Length: 427
Image (cartoon, rainbow, N blue to C red; front, side, top):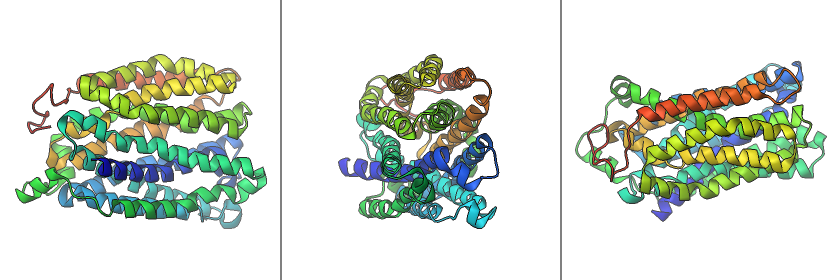
């Protein structure tokens, strides 16, 4: 289990590094470089638009790679998705700016971002199922939480490289070539991840399905026909987690640097500190999920998010680093209270024959609802007036309440509390 957890964590960290480095670049430099004819606000919105395309592609990637995972095994998904995301990320770093290619430059950016999202849409399902289906029942949430540590690690890697380059280069150097370096580094990281995953074994549950001839012929069709309500509920439930995380990690960077005039290095340090804390506490929260259940923690995380959004926005607007860090940390602790246990929760909600497709589509559809729209909506809402952007806080609070309602309609899946999953098979 230790080797499986390490390989899953490393792979998701690399894939989310690829995904996050684009979000950071979108907040800091992509607007002026690829949309120079727009106003600063419109350029930021356009850059976040290309950022959102990655989220739109993720459910499509879930359907594509979910079919592979449910028909041919979880292991092939982990290789193919990592290869696709790594190649697309390296290519982003090679795209010339608008000044060189004109309109072709942002079009290429859009296409490559779509491919990034396609690969990441498959990564989560493969990595989570590889650990969850190997893990013992009483420690499933703990072991399955290790892939969930990957996103914070990937974010810290992406922003650590950006921070070092931002601090070590002049503004002109950073805009000319410095921002491209983190994208080029993705190639080396992907190669290391593929090597680490090369010795992993297929999960026992999939091997049993294959041996008994019970694999789904058309997993997506089965999910759409028999589990559509479950997919919609899980997508709505998880939307707040994406909304909170990308408000802190993407929109707040742009708001702090552009509207408040805070140095981008200061903003990156505040956000990175909060993300690091959320990654550290993830396995400890997962242990609580094994002891008290998945659903209670998810409900608590949603409630905490609803309560904390107005204080977070107020603390951000002060422009004082320690207060901003406090606001970000509180928001991400609420977020991780949910997301530390969903890697066990979602697979347990679906029967094994369609688990890779159902869990991944629900998870990544939530990314469209919460992650793709939030930076765009928040930027637009905060564009008017000089006071604190309370409209952003109100929007996030509404999302949290909707997610709370969705979680309330989902059942508990903890094995000790329920001998069978909702689909009538052992969880």
